[in-house]
Image (cartoon, rainbow, N blue to C red; front, side, top):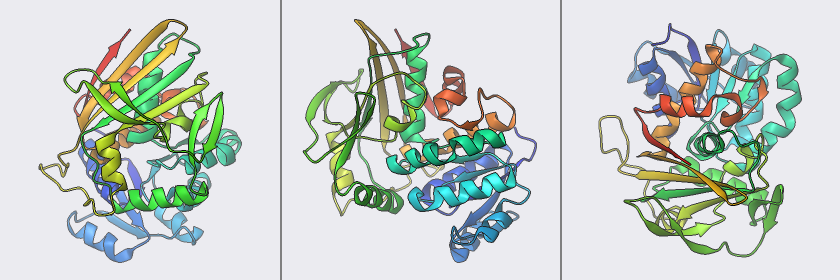
Length: 343
């Protein structure tokens, strides 16, 4: 249990933000509820009396400063992160506290590395973007699979989701990303981002049993193409998504997630299969669990815990696999995921 560290949660009333607030409470942190909508914040606080409420707007730096005053760290759960990440990072830098976000937006994460790496390092401040299911978990698994390899030829991250009921925030973030890319898709190849206008390929991926081989959308690119190459020497990073989940995401009438247990998780299950290859050798790491939004909360909160207790490897802007001991971090998530590391 934590000793009452105060952690500001921006976007606390959102779907993922609520999971983060609950996980902070469970771990003994004291959340400060923040976000753009005072009414939604009050509604959330009514279910958890005693928590501080601090409305703040990304267009009002003074309000962000008030929200972060006295906090030991901030977790940004408010998308689209193309709009919120930079202002909340600026506020964290002014406050001199660590910043963690759960951004899945490729461009927003790339912007964080581009615009804040030097400033954060100079300030001795820690900034961890994409500390979530997409971006963070894949990076941790790829780093763990690499083990003592200093480089690999390619990394493949295959997402075996049985379904995907997207939140409103996921849909908005996707729209923002598509606009920023002028409708093109992106992949990471030959050590750089490449934008394409053709349709992504469909292929079969041999997931571990009992899932087995499934049809996937190839080059269904997620934030892993930013986080993994930020610290691992891998010129080819490819991500894949089960066809069923991709269809759910693209269908305009797919409903938002519905809770099926006391923790508020949906019935969605996931299997993340990561394969790294070097020459003729292959290494693998697999994670299984329930609800991609719910599992983001322990990822983000464990990151804050490790930052505040000094269990980090660097300062500045860093992805999960670079700043944390990947294997130890993943094993700490055992209440939330099952982990398999193979060689």
